[in-house]
Image 1 (tube, rainbow, N blue to C red):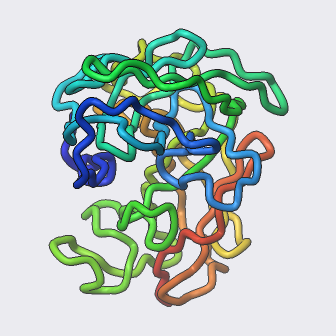
Image 2: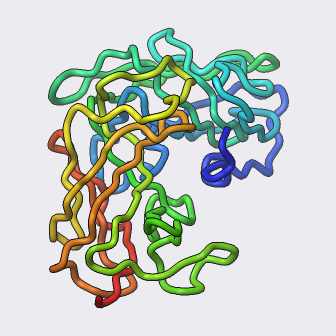
Length: 275
């Protein structure tokens, strides 16, 4: 697993959960980037990275370290959706991150429900919990992995994060400017022209999304040059967009992705400076 996003995918799980049965929280299955903030139905999309919240989900934290990603990790034997095993990215006692299997059927519009079950080698299976799935569930990854705040949006060509200078320790940051191309890391952007197998990444050139998203900067639309699966990652989407001339400036300009009639939260932001 590429280490660039690993810190955002590994749950902090300080409380051991040895032989207690796992339990998935009602409404605890959410988009792994946005945590489904501002999305009332909390839908998740096939192929995307999702987070499962609950208790006693794993005895110790663990992170997948190779691709293809396995359907078991640590003492977590499986995570299934309607009986289909999901590749497991990271586990902790209160959170598990997986890729929702591509083969799950989502309606062309609206949602359907699937049953999620977490099974541990040492503690058995959780009770099934119904969770809604739909074709689209856009969410943008953030620097603090809390679903809101500073977006993981990189400015080409030096890959600085589009944030106020010096605002993220250990990372190069600077505001974007109109005309800059930024790379937004997201998940849940729906079907692609050709997807890899579950748990595998796209080799070489990434596969494009069937629907082209609309990216806005506080309501001002930018020109999308690419939208699809990011090479070298599992379940990760990448959107390349040009910051529009009319974009507002400031340290916290709302950044949103709309696709398939579903819009990501307005609580994700980037920094934009005057040209």
